Amino acid sequence: MSTMTATTARVLRVEIADDVRAIVREPAALFFSVLMPVGFFALFVSLFGHQTSDSGSSTGTLMVATFGTFGVLAVTLLNPAISVAGDRERGWLRAKQVSGVPTLVTLAAKMLAALPYALAVLVAMAVAAALNGSLDAPVGKLVALAAVLLLGSLPFTLLGLAVGFVASPNATSAILNAFMFPAAVLSGLWMPLEIMPAFVQQLAPFLPTYHLAQLAVAQLNGGPVLVHILVLLGMTVVTATLASMAYRRGRS
Amino acid sequence: MTMEEVLKVRGARHRYADKVALDGVDLDVHAGECVALLGPNGAGKTTLVNLAIGLLSRQAGEITLAGGDPRHAATRRKLGVVQQSLGFPNTMRVGEAVTGAAVRAGLSRGAAGPIVAEVGLTDLLKQRVVKLSGGQRQRVQLAMALVADPALLVLDEPTVGLDVPARRRFWDLLAERRAKGTGVLVTTHLIEESAAVADRVVVLANGRVLADASPDVLVDRLPDRTVSARTTLSGEQLSRLPGVVSVDREGEHVRLTTRSPEALLRCLLAEDPALAELRVEGAGLEEAVVALTKASGTVVAA
Image (cartoon, rainbow over all chains, first blue to last red; front, side, top):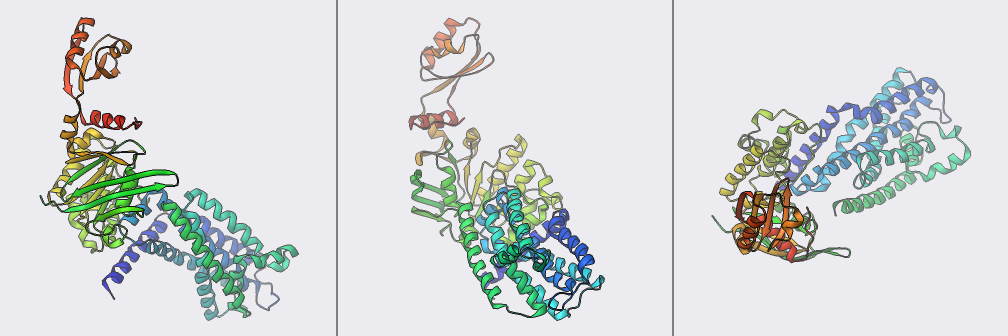
């Protein structure tokens, strides 16, 4: 490993440690992004978890995928974005830029620091479903589900960063929640699309959250994945461009 | 003292949309030297500093930081910056801030130890930075800036909000580093403080360098003298006296700037028999900077 790579790796570790400590030491900040999705999931899975879906799986199992999509996005969309908005507002981001830390390292650290919490949300939901007796997926499929959701959250994290680079922490939270909650409802993340009005079912395929959820469901039930992957890849290109533009605007 | 240039700016020009921020600026900071960058708001100081520390890409001109391009991360590791009011993350502790700065500079975590002791933070390592006093927070920033033994230290209003002992300690710490060859570029509105600590003063207005000289030379160029006294004469009466350039009044105490101190003194004594506490002084750096910027047609910020 070259000296430069080794230094970058050490800086990345320090950056991740800073971000993880910030979350651990102020756990109240996790209420909306961790406790609320898990709490809602526990409530819904206790009410509807034992029903059987059209695909034959228990609703509780499918809800780990759909509600899990919401839970992962609540962490990966909001936490890095609010964190970078706060760092920018405080001048901390500038301090890191002038210290020679590549901005990509700072951003990668914020994304990676959010992943353990996103994974914890998924594990908590799976445990809740198992305790409720409505989880009927093998561990291998659940691992694939987790991997897809964590990886698939990248374009959403980039979207959050694009907002965090130009808005205040409070505004970032408001803007992203204004996107996430309607998108969650309209994509069938909280309630199955089958019970939603027809116009919602027609609208859902136009939302990236729908495609991430369907990709997650496909890990449990099988089914086509290519179109969902392409949509998410396209969104990654768009949100990476937006984040890059927002970064330059915020810096100038 | 070696005269190696740690910052060299030649012909820097920069504009934002329709506003020219810098119009052909030259600036040097040598190893061990402290240069104060002064000027009214909007003079171009922030733009010049941001170019020097690599946060802005230059549009025209040449900028060299410690022999390299400040836009490159590797070059910026030879730079230390103390911001006016850096907000630390709420949960960060002193030790984490300084060791983090060491690692970001490509050093081991252990490299933070000596600088922590040097700036007197050893007893505060476990404290959250946001819980510290303003002076202590500035010392944390200074430790972070100095941990990699930078060639150039850039200070933005570093002592605003600090009490006198904290200011003295701050500048004493810097004097030790300057003696070892660290160059310092400081932007400040505390002009008299910069007169005390800077080897050279660069006055900037409307994106141009108006003066680049030692504080003493700048003051000597100014023919003005300051007459202070306790008097019952009104501001209007005082402003009509011969040679009066400006009048500052605080209660009965007045401070008059004049180019004809002898004539002014004769009139003052004639018009106010109760005149007391009379003093005549040379103008200070502040008056010199104000005179320079006024002469350039710049509106001087309060």
